[in-house]
Length: 269
Image (cartoon, rainbow, N blue to C red; front, side):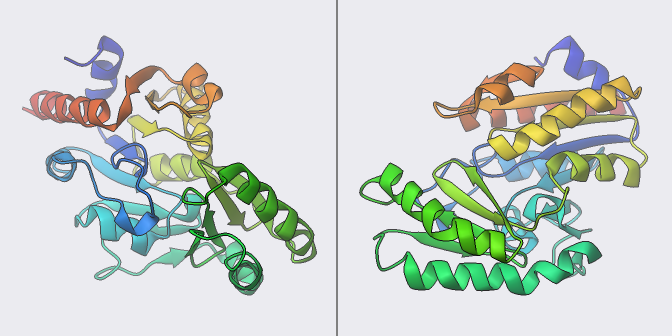
């Protein structure tokens, strides 16, 4: 059974269901390429898409997020909102926000520097390139905290010179365009794009906090909106503080997704 608050949102039409991937519908993997949806998640997403607008909102590039989910009929929003695709990128064009274009080359230059300067010094470092910037994963480093400091110290000055922004996730350093685009603004765009009356958003990490806070603002604006936080040992406290519902880990999130799918099917009957 889902909570009464979630049920109220699920009765709204048009309805939106928006999910982060890593740590939400996919267990955190040792490397980005190893990530897979939790068993059953894809089927529930596909069923839900018959009754709701389903979005995948990820820090990964659209192509990478779509590779993992691999379902047609969903909206894929990548790089924290800089990319948008109305279906799988193999069949639909990926739209890049115009204001992000000037940061294509600076982002590439900064990641080239990371490849040259950091990879030889940090065994196990994984550099994940995106259309704009990318993510440097140090989860496999022998000393993750020392690796983190070396990454930040190496990239701080070049990032400032190239006008790129540095942020952090779980055992990862993000290279971002210095734009006010984030998962919250992307979520708002999704709601307005589909003229939604109700929306549920689920995430687990620091960058998902923007989406969770946007849920609060959407409620203030009269929408039926609900935020779900997936709790792990390293989930930022602010994510848990501002969420409406907290579930323990990806397995519990996928069980809740199953119940949401059942409920949304019933409300459409």
